[in-house]
Image 1 (cartoon, rainbow, N blue to C red):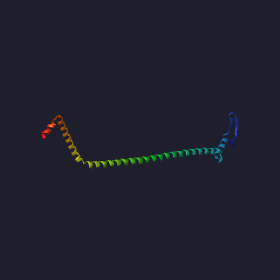
Image 2: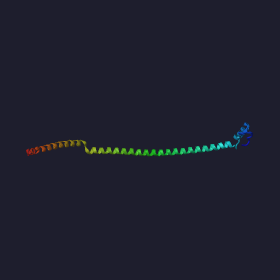
Image 3: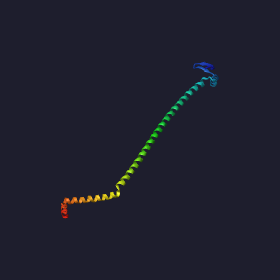
Image 4: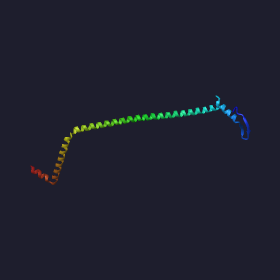
Length: 144
């Protein structure tokens, strides 16, 4: 270090006066070509560049994640819109089909037909019982 004057040397090594140390520090801090500030600025610049790079990488990763989220969100929205449309169409088709069945079946006639079929089934059951008992032939003969 230039300008630093040794005051004395003992068994621990050289010793300096406070004034000479203060002068060297003041000169180092105030001079344009001082190595102390240049070294500090160099480290700060390197650290700032690293921090800037880290922030830029984090921003890029976050931006990519947001873009993927937006794509997934759009795909989900389209899929749900399609499913909703399909459900609506199926409900409309089913309602239309039920209307056609109701018009074709004519439920008033259907009720009458069911009643007639029940009466015919009951009559046939009675005839079957009479035949088993052997009375059907006697009744048929009596009617002739």
